[in-house]
Every structure is written in structure tokens, then in C-alpha cells.
Length: 294
Image (cartoon, rainbow, N blue to C red):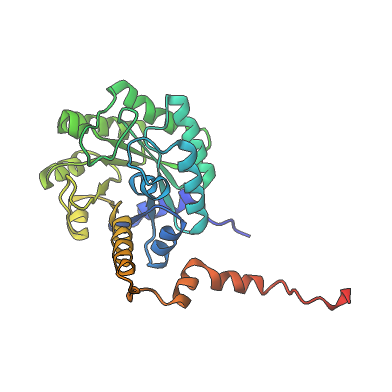
């Protein structure tokens, strides 16, 4: 009997197929399941959204490796599509990076994203972020790739935030260095205009990801435009959490007025979405009426 493809192999196959991959980002098992049910082939555990949903806190390095790993394990177990995990700075020195990558692979992630910000890091589309020097940035990615080569079945996404601090020239230098080391996906965070996005895709080899943050620093381009520029993945990190927050706020306002929200899912549909129907079908395989004890 043939073994199912690992999450990493599933992602490798997606990257080899033609066309852009649109990737809504999740923050818990339910949001990941909704993404899969909507037909998307890939998702990403957003650090911003996960910190907000799990801690009610900003994405400023407050959420720990253990908390991200636990959340990621739940997400990966909830879906059959590959999941990319935000692994922030790797949570320490190169040996911490290796442990992080190993842990993410064991949790079921298809890919771990490692970035070059100083610790504590912060959301890439906020002010005040800083990056480490070239050598430390390179060492993080080298350590991640060393762990992949040592047997962890996981891809490595290498991210730089250097555009904000040092400009495009430095950012592109780092992207090229990460590609030369063998990173599977390259992510230049927060280019400021389409020309910078085009330059990045033209100069840097291999699969590249665009981060489509609503009201962020990077222009929101259509999927067709991103594909034409040369991106392979379009991430939408805050779309779902923002939509969820808006919907909850509107429901709370309605309840505060003493009324009941009308734009809700039918209860039967909600039960199905969270898995009650599947659970009951599986449970039916194990009859509970046993007359032999009477």
C-alpha cells in the first residue's frame, strides 16, 4: 500500500505546478478547515493572527515557540492540505533555529518561515522593526537548511525585512544569499511599490511569495498581476482574522441593543463545518448496544 505524500511533498508538488497559488492564512484549526473546505490547496499559520487569536496580543514577539508549536499542531491535524508555519526568528541562535525547524516538521508543517528581524520581532507592516546583521541572518537560514538536510521533512521559506531598514539593495542581497544557501521559497517583506516587486521577481531565482496585507506597505495587486510579475504564492495573512473580528463586533453591537443577530450560519451548517457530521458517521462504526452483558 502506497504511503500518502508528506505535507512537504504535497507543497513541493504545488510549487512545481504552473500558476499562482492563492493562500488565505489561518490562525486556528477552524479557520484552517474553512480554507480547505473553500478549495484552497495551501494555507499559512499567520503569526499576527495567531498572536491575536490565542493571546489577544500584538505580533511583537510575545507569543512563544511552545505556543506557536501547539497552535500549529492543532492546525495541521485539522486539515489535509499543506500548512506553512511562521517560525519568526527561529527563537534564538542557530541551534534554536534547528530545534524550531525540527519541531515544526514533527508538528506536521510543510514549511517553516525564518526571518532576519531582531528579537523581539514585530509584524512586517508596522513601524519600529529592525534586522540583524548579514552574518546572523545568513546563519539562521543556513541552520534551518542544515536541519532540513539532516532529515527533517520540511521546506524552508527565508524572509528578509531589510527593505524597511536598509533599502532594496540590501534586501535583494539577502534574498540572493538565502537562495544560494538553498532556501525553497524566498520572501521579501513589504516592498513599497510594483517596481520593487518586479525587481525582486526578476532578480531572485526560485519560488517567491507576496504578502498581501490590507492597508499595508505593499500595493494590493490582483492574482493575475502577481502571477505576471513572477510570484508563485500570494498570502493573505489578515483577511480572515479581520473578517472574523468585524463579524463578531457587529454581532456584539446587535446583542447590546437587546436584539439578536440575523446574519448567522444555520446551526446545522455550523455543526457540519466544525465536524459533527463526520464525527457521528465515524462513531456509528462502533455500536454501543451490547446485549451480551444482560
